[in-house]
Image 1 (tube, rainbow, N blue to C red):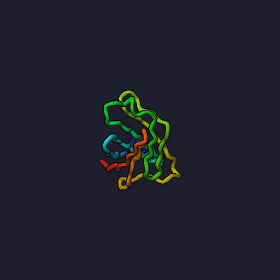
Image 2 (cartoon, one colour; image 1 turned 45 degrees about the vertical axis):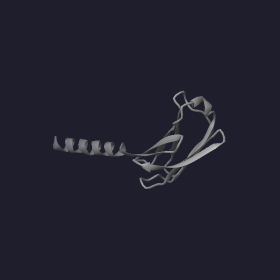
Image 3 (tube, one colour; image 1 turned 90 degrees about the vertical axis):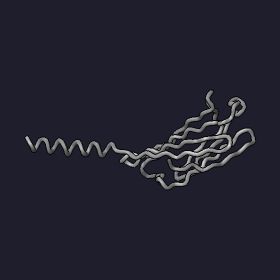
Image 4 (tube, helix red, strand yellow; image 1 turned 30 degrees about the vertical axis):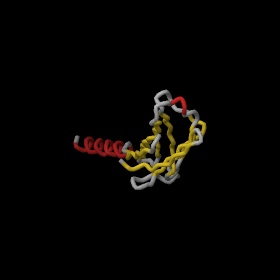
Length: 126
């Protein structure tokens, strides 16, 4: 009986450790934009970076297409993107185990270009 419980406990601990993940968030803003970057890392070394970019101005329709980049370890970006009706853009980047990973000390910088305007700002760990 005790042996079965011990084996069950070991199996449960292994499952829990395999499902563990680390998550941290970076955020920052400029005159016209705010951004949050959520980084999730699983124990099998996969990483997901989820960006939420928000226009702080009143007239969302005046923004048109934007180009943005997230400069960090394994940075990503896109051009020709458009905001939703709330002035928000959501994007995600996934990295496999062979890619370098973001750490809590990674410097993250976001650049946004729109209507011949350009702003670059740093995101800080929250």
